[in-house]
Image (spheres, helix red, strand yellow):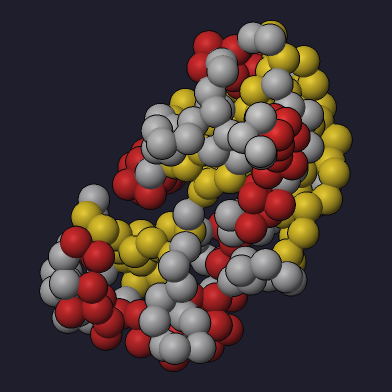
Length: 148
Length: 109
């Protein structure tokens, strides 16, 4: 598994985290998944973090926004291939909360560490397993990011 | 009407990204959908027969929770979207403990 992303989208994804610091940013990765399971990101879509009660350590994308993004993407021949968010002053590793709240199996979850306002490491994780699982039965796998 | 299937559930609908279902209500639609694609049922519904908490169902741009849930009426040209939730966040419990524990020492007499 891997995540392929253009340089511009890559920069936009990381910059989003810097702009929302010290709060978590979030967004959607649009593109297509090829026959080998590689997610080819063609563009990113910024979203509003709905967790205004705890934005420094929680994020949530409003389902209505996902519905709109998905509809508009499909009209352009694209699909949702993953999501991204940032971890302010925290490593770019998935947390138990990230896993518990992840349900889009087959998609990528990219996380950027933003330290003191500057994006440092961005990692991506492929969600595998049972999409209906609340806790067990699903897991994240590290995946390469290819910026092209 | 058209039912949009999200990426994680397409493996249970023969890889179809959308399915056409004729139904008068959302409940009837979900019943027909899971009858046609039985493997979908356990991923949409819990053991109590209710939609799982992270499964959002929209009729056009409206969440059925704010309409009539399973009784929400459907029209032929409606689009139903099944959209799993997207949320998360960094771990903080350990960090917060490490931050606040020393403060508790000043309140102990």
